[in-house]
Amino acid sequence: MNIAELDKDTLAKLGLENMIDKPAKERKQTPKDVIRGHASAVMGLLSKHSQADRKRILDHAIKMNEV
Image 1 (spheres, rainbow, N blue to C red):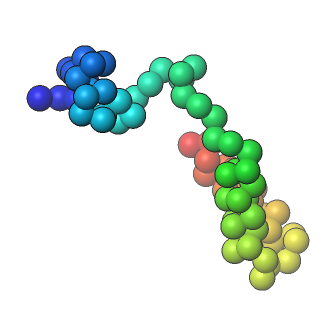
Image 2: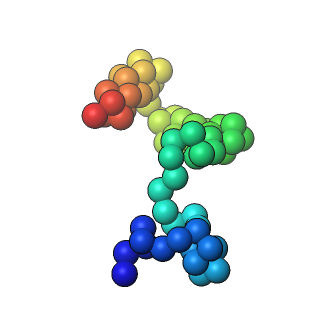
């Protein structure tokens, strides 16, 4: 049986209500502090590069994200 075929009550009883895709307006945005933490982790990985290289790397990452 496909999880999409289950009704909301059954999903809740099984604890699977978070496993199905929700419409975009029901999705919650990631909190700012989590985003800051991820950004700090990325910048930490790039710390050994010069500022010019960091800019090039981040610009390339933005292009890759648009795909």
